[in-house]
Image (cartoon, rainbow, N blue to C red):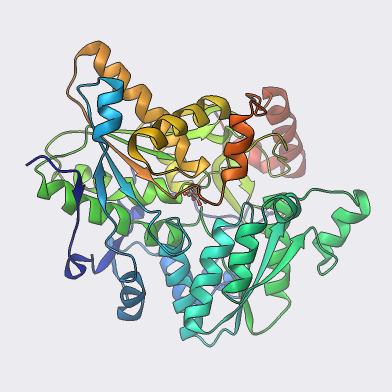
Length: 463
Ligand SMILES: *Cc1c(COP(=O)(O)O)cnc(C)c1O
C-alpha cells in the first residue's frame, strides 16, 4: 500500500512509556553534587514530586501511563505519520521519507507529551504551583496548557529577548492562565545578581532555569518542571516512537535512518529510543542509523566536551555527565533557529559518545532553506528547530540519490512554525547570517569549569 498518511485509532495509544536506561551500552553516569558525591533521590524532593523522581532513577524498562494522562493525550494523540511524497519528488530521490508530526498538539509541538505527565504527577502529590523557564515559549506554553488542565498555577520565567521579540507564545501562556515573568527578573536572587552585573541582560535559558528553580525551592507548595534533558522527560516522549513503530508496521516498513533535531534531546529520544530498543532486543529487521541534528550556533554534541557540568548558569542543578558547551554559554542574538541549550541529555550524550548515534550540525541559513523547500512541497511550515532535522533528511535523501539507494528515512517533525514567522520573515529578507559558535569559547568555558571543580577534569578523559 502506498500511504500518504498513516493513522492509528485512539485505542491503539501505547499504554506504557519506554525507559532506555537499562538498555544503554554502559551504565548511565549518575548525577553528582558539586563536591563529586552522587545525588540521592531525596535530594531532589524540594523541586520535584516523588512520582517523577522515581522515574528519574528508575531502571524499569516499561512504565505504565496513568489513565488520566492517556485521557489528555487523546486530545491530539495518536499523531499522524506522513510520507513526504512531494518532497521526495522534488529531490528526485529513490529514498522514502516519513515523518511523525507532533505539531498537531494544542501548543503545536511534542512538548505537551511530558508537560501533561509532569502536571499530573505534581497534582497527585498536592503541589499547587509549577515554575519553569522558557526560551521561544514552546515549553512554557506546553506547561501552561498542562497545568491549566490539572488545576495547577504556573509561573514561567521567559528569556527577556524572547519575551520582547516573540509575543505570541506569551499570549498563549497567559490565555491558558500562566503568569509570565521576563528573565532575568528582580524576583529571585539569581535574577537580581545578573541584573546587577548587566542591567541590560537579554537573558538566557540558563539564567531562567536558575530563577525557576530558586522560586520552587523557596516555596513549599511549588515545584519546578523541566522540558527536556532529564530521564523522566525523555521517558514521557517515547510515546512518539512507540506509535511510530506501529505505524511503520502497518505499511510494512522499517526505517534505515532515523533523524531528529536536538536541543536538550527529548523529541529525538522520544522518536528514536523505541527503535533503539527494537535493535537491542533483537526485534528489528535491519539496523538503523541514528542522526542527531543541532545548530552550528549551539553545537553541544559536535563541538562540546563530554564531561560533568551544571544544567544552569547559577549552578543550582546537579552536575550531569553530558556533551556541554559550558554552563555559561550565551547564544548569539542573531541566531533564530531555537535549540539554544548548552548541554544535551545524559542518555543521548552517552549514545553519541559510544558511536551508536551520530551527530551533525547545520547553520541557520541552510536550515531555513530546507524549511522553505519543505513548506513548498509538504505545506506544513516546520518549527525552526524541526527544520534542522529537515535539512539533515534532505542531505540523506540526496546522498541516497547519488548512490541509487532505496533508503527508508524517518524523522520527527517536532512542531509547526506558525508562531515563528518572524524568523521566517528575517530569512526571506536575507537578514539571517550563517553563524558558528567559536571553538575557543567552548575551550574557555570548560577550563573555567575545571578550575571550579578540579575532579571534573578526571571525569572527561579522552573527551
Ligand atoms: C523545544 C523544542 C525542540 C528542542 O527540544 P528537544 O528537547 O531537543 O526536543 C525541538 N523542536 C521543537 C518544536 C521544540 O519546541
